[in-house]
Each structure stands twice: as structure tokens, then as C-alpha cells.
Length: 487
Image 1 (cartoon, rainbow, N blue to C red):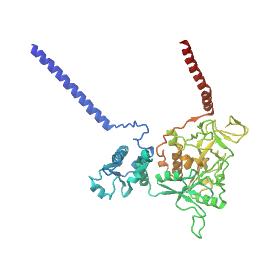
Image 2: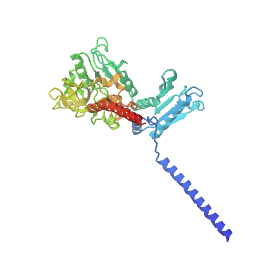
Image 3: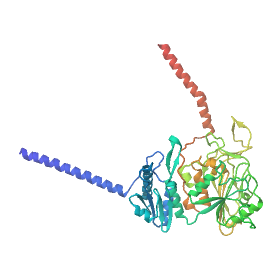
Image 4: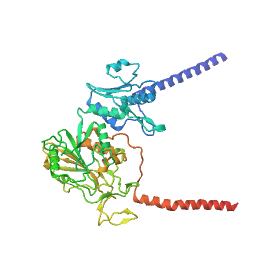
């Protein structure tokens, strides 16, 4: 009897253990199947460095929508060389992220030493190369395109630029031709060839990344001998950024004549600066004064925080809450009533507490709104215009215009300061040339965090620092004195 009971207990324990084991294994298998079917990836890094940029994801969606398989082949770095492990890890991780994000893009990471046949079949002779293929179209990237040394001495390190380079390759696959955008020069405008704070070299670099070419256009010098001045036939858009002297009427007539064929213009001005007369033809006025707001970018009193209005150019910036920095902006206004055939949309404006500052008395060294002198807000700082044939300014095709009240917004000096400046500038060009599908947040947002304060906030901070801090020190000192006296 005792033997039977012991056997029963063993059988019971054994069957329970077997059942639990089967359930655990079954749960693990079921969980693995669910995880494999519905994959979820989490990036817990502080800078989201393991997540593809929004612009890369957008280009992958466009490639998926266009159809046609895309293959990205990445080759390993040379073994034994410095940073080879870092290069291989970064590149293989990028391939994995791209492969996961797109059903139409296939990636592979190839060991250059072990799989020489693959390298030979693609004509690759260097370590660390990347080949992007779509049908008979191909983009080749070298190790120099993917990595860059930065810093000096002990701070010298290697930066990975692979995603930006591959992103640029995707842009080339999406467009058969490289569109050319011209920046007017010869009247003191900002130049795309200048790396000075007041130049447009950073904008040119950002547009180059998106497979656009930004070139200087001098209507007087850039012509063959005996030919009349003209806007080049390949111009997708023309930028007029902060002229410092008046643009002659014949030059403006040339620009308007070119625009009538369905062109695109971006005009950026400054407060009390030179205004091209052609703005009046589009029904845009630039009142005297400059824009201020109670909500500002600390510690700059002339940098109001713009509010985005809904438009294709600003939609992604609005959703991601990326600030576009302006510096002493001019107000821009569309005529009321609007010119027939010209539809105006506000891109950037102040809050209701903003105003047009025209001088007058200040308070504590700070400008204050005065109803009898200043202009009431909200105040527009950027406009987008759709121009139809009804206006008489274009013939068959509609034209587009962007007017900025601040040329510094797209300058080298300010472009990198605002998390949204580069995206705003590039998206404005994308909209002008008709590439709305490619509009998205460009690059990685700046990690710099800037404090936005109203005048009331600044006043409170001032009183706290001047009043509360000394009072706190006095209270602590009194407590120390009282404790010592009690001894």
C-alpha cells in the first residue's frame, strides 16, 4: 500500500512537472511567434540615435509607393584597421534598420574579404563601400562619404554619416534629374558660395543632400557675349535673399517674365531693408518696423517664437513642435482684399501678444506695445502664395511664391540655431518646385535646448534672483547663529 502511494505521488509530481514544462515551452513558442509576426522595436537611447530619421522613413515610403525593388549592399571595413569594428557595427546596424523599415528595400552586409565574388560582380574595389541599386539605376558611396574624422588631439573621433549619405542616394533614385535652384546675386544678396555668417553655403549643402543644386545667378555677368540677360531654362526656382541695393526694373521684368511660365520665387527681406518692387505685383506689403512678441527666445529680445500655421511647408514642423528661429523679422502682409488669382497662406506668425514695433518709449530697457504707434498682432512673418492664371501674372501653369520677413532664417549664422530652420528652408524649396511628397523633417533635430520666456517670466526670474536668494542666505545664517547661541 505504501509503495502504491509513493508511486502515485511520483506519477503526480512527474505529470505536473511535465505539464508545466509543456505549458512553459508552449508559451515561449507562442510568444516567439507573436513577436515574430508583430515586431515592435524600441529605441531607448537618449538621442534616438538608433532610429531612422523622419526624412529617411519618408523616402522609404516613397520608394515603396513607386514600386520596384531596391537593393542596398554594404561592404565591411578592412580588418585590423583602427575603427574597423566601429565602422562595421554602425553600417550593419543601419542596414538592419532600413531592411526592417521597408518591404521594397533589401539590404545585405557583405564581408569584403570573404565574399570577393559579390564585390567583383558589383565592380567594388574598396573596403567600406555601399552600392544602392534600383533597376538599371545605381548610386555608389565610398568610405569617405560614410565616415568623417572630427575633433583634434584627445578629442579626435569618428562620426558616422552613413544615414545621411544613403538618404541622399535614395533622393537620387526618386528623381531622374537633379533640379537646379538659383540664388540671385549682383545686388548685395546673400550668396550660396559664401561660408560667412551672412552666406547661404549651409542652405546649399542642405539642398545638395536632397539632390537639388543651388547656384548663384548674376543676370548681368552670367550670359554669353551678345545675348540678352535671362533666367536659365533649367531654373526650377529663384531665390532673392536680402538685396541691399535696388534691383533694376529690367532685372525684375526678366524675373516676372520667367515666372509667368509657371516659375517659383522665394523673396526674403529685412526690416527697413531694400524691397523688390515685384512684391507689390503679388499683393504683398512690408510695413515699417520689426516684429516683437512677449514670447521670445531667451536671451534675445528681438527673436519672437514663431507660431506655425497649417500648410504643406510647416505641417511636419508643427506636428514635431520644432521651433524655427527668426532674428529681427520684418512683418509681411497680403493685400486685403486679395488680388484675384493670388491665394495667400500664412506660414509663420506671432502669438496674439505679438506686435509690430515702431519705436516709442521703452520700459526697463525693453520695448513695449503702444497702440498709438505700434501695429497690433498677431503679425505674419512668412507667407506662401499660389498664383493662378486669373491673376494675369502667369499664363497656363500656376506659379508659387514664398515671402520671408527674415533673411537670417536661411543664413549660415542662424540656420543651425533653430531645430526647425533647415527643415523649413528645404521644405519651402520642395514646395516651390512641386515636390510636396518629399516634404518632411530634414536631418536630426538639434540637441540644444533653448529657453523660451515671456517678459513676465523674465521679470519673475529677476526678482527671485535679486530678492529670494539673499533672503534665503539670511535665513540660513540666522539659523546657524541661533544654533550656536543655544550652545
